[in-house]
Length: 270
Image (tube, rainbow, N blue to C red; front, side, top):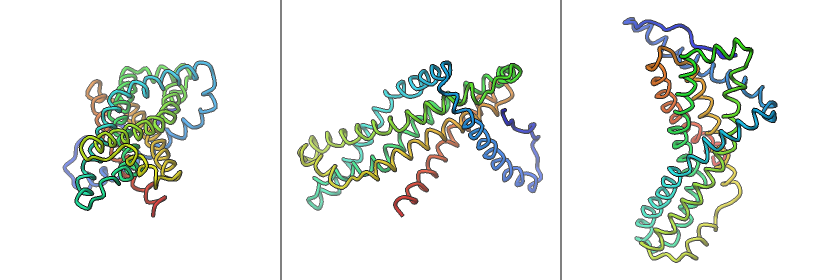
């Protein structure tokens, strides 16, 4: 069952009323998103059914594989920028061969999952919100409920599973491309040999760093789907409402990725 927003509140000039709405409404929205998440979790055993399995594989291709193009460019240039900026400073101390360590640690711990989450939030999250919002304003969601079809199971669950699987894989792919891009900059512009670069890149990295990075990516993928689905289900007022839901999805997803990324890092590296 989808938890919908209350009816639209008219604008008010009363500062107390405005402050109350500005405080309560985000909390109510977060609560409804959490309820949607748990409602979707309850439907996970159905993922092995034939229709759900086919839809999940299709969503993995649509949400994950089709994002490889833009993600490859962003990941490669992120590693190149990290290597260039770090190498310029390390060269002052004659330590430019250590850029491999800096790029590897930055990409695996933070930048790989972070950039992957931002790219998917902007592309995949907005697409999910627009699709759900369009179905909502055209009353297709209500039609599913009339036919006793759970929208969380039919729409949200395949996308949640697909993003939970694909986001860590895409993050790992981003880390590889970022490290390779950093190696290209190190070799062509800083005079760092390939062997020295990759030896230093693998010198201090440990399994915990990879685990934390993949955990962040997994959480980011789940957050994006839940936020986008909730905002789509909250859309109203036709095309304007769909546009607003898409905009809110991107903004809230970006903020959530920043906050959750910080707290996960603090939890494991404090």
